[in-house]
Length: 249
Image (cartoon, rainbow, N blue to C red; front, side, top):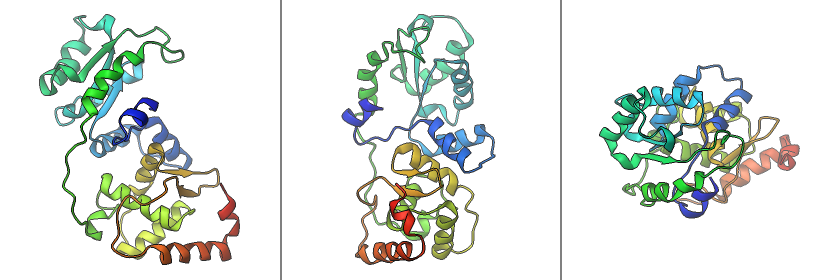
């Protein structure tokens, strides 16, 4: 993560475990397999390090034909040429779909999860894979296209961050109330997952009292009107109703 922050500043890496932790704190009960598939829909790439039995299970779940083009696999070099199901199944499928550069091998330590090993040997190849930002056209976004109840993607997540930036600190319930004001009554079940992804990114944070606030210094989107009055309204409301929130962090 430190390597990507320094050398790949245009990317956002996040650990699925951080997302799961936030969902658990919010009392989320959906099975994690479905949540992981939502992560794959959301993400441009899914990087899996084959370092534990659970990671092999994840490889099987994500290597479906519709998802494998997003996969980048880091494996132990001692298994590189082994005629195993992993090599002849999922890894071969990824190789055929996306090319050998998506399979990165290095010399793993037996206890590499708990102690440092040669993972740094993979950084050059990771850098080469992600050094060029994905091309996207800059265009105006309509509010309805950012509806987090209808769209589970980076654009609705960025809008949700901006809402927290302008109005936070606030609770999950209050986020939903604001969304109802903007979009009307709707199914906002995925909002908790988008908030969890934003926490995993480090764009927002959730404290022990369940209050979300932004960790960024600005919004993701550029708005063609002055945001200061909106921020002032929310700050004044918090000062009158919940003054302790302004000092909660």
